[in-house]
Structures are given as structure tokens and as C-alpha cells.
Length: 256
Image: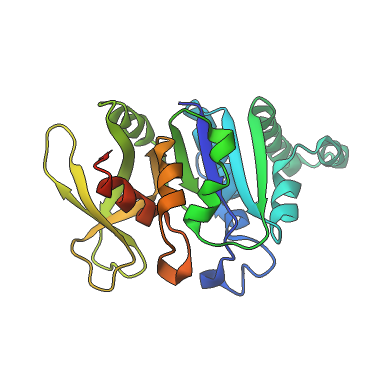
């Protein structure tokens, strides 16, 4: 699997006022995985997501960005050799570490096929995904929200393998049991060996029927695009990926 779609077009209203000018995906996080230095290395979330997916073999990336946040995201993501030269010219011992981090990131970025798609007005997670249809093509792909943080991606290899266990599987979801369920997509599953089978999903239900939360990372076949095109607007009058997965279930697709 080589293709990943990363959505960053949302307005980030739940984190206002911090996200008024800077999108959630650029908020800094302390990255402990870069080196053994005890000094903090702060990196934006989108960079951490990209590098972890790259390290797991992904080489085609489609970024869905809003027109409001596109400039700031591109300013960070696009290789900037002039900035590297500026840091080197300062000859500061602390800058050497930052130069190394940026050069490592740029080297990976330049080896990938990158597509930027702008959205003037965010109309839901599903609407953002639908914009990537042409880029994705006919292969299975990974969908990852640009505001989802995973402490590590050790789960990813098994997650991908589970999606490939049966050719009939159209979508593979990642779950976590939670006590607080407000604001999450919820799934119900049947116990099967070796994979549990999803038989119902709901986007932010008022009365959840399980405590199984759908995490914002998915492996999908292109069938999802047809489902999105046939799915009505849902929560917040927006097109939702969870609702499109429900459409797939109505069509008797296998979801795990």
C-alpha cells in the first residue's frame, strides 16, 4: 500500500482561539522519536504523521487543505533550502539539530508524489475525502485525519495486513473502547475469527449502542467514493465518512 490521504481542511473550532490563524495540524508536539537528545524537539503534527506513514512505506500523499490554512501548511511542508542555509550561516550549535531534522524531513518529502487539493468551504470529512477520488485511483489507500495524534505507529503494519486478509473487505477500521463517547463515531461488531465484523456504525449518536469508538485512521477501497456520492448529508449537515461506511454496510460490503 503506497497511497495516503490526509485531511486538514477543517476549521478547528474546538481548539479556538489557538487555531484561528494556525490550523490544528500545525500545532507543535514534543517528538521523542527523532533522536536521543533530552532537549525537546517540537514538530508540527502534520510532519509527524507524514514521516510515520513514510517510514511504513507510503510514497503517494494527497493533502486536503482549506484555502484559509493552505499557505501556512505549504510554508512548512515544502522544502526550503534558503532557510537551511540561513540556519547554517548562524553557526549555532543548537541549530545543527534543527537543520538535521529539516533535512531528514525534506529528503523524504522529495521522494514522494504529493498532491495538494484546496477546499474553499469545508463540508465535512466525507466531502474532503471525496475530493481525492481522482488521485487515489483504483487501489486501496489509507485515510488519516490531519489532527489525529498516535504516540507511535507500531500498530500500522498489522492494521494493513488485516485489511488484506480477505479480498471481500472494503473498509478496515481501528477501534478503541472509551467511557466518554460524546463526539465520536461508534461501531458495533460481531466476534469472528480472526477478524471482528462490523455490522453497524453511527456518527456521533445521541444514544451510543456500544463503547467502541472509531479512530480517525482507515484503510479503504475505492468503493468508498461511490458510497459517498450516494450518501445524504448527516451530522452538522455535512457529508460524513461514517455515514458512507453505513451505506457500504447497506450494500452488504464486508467491513472489519
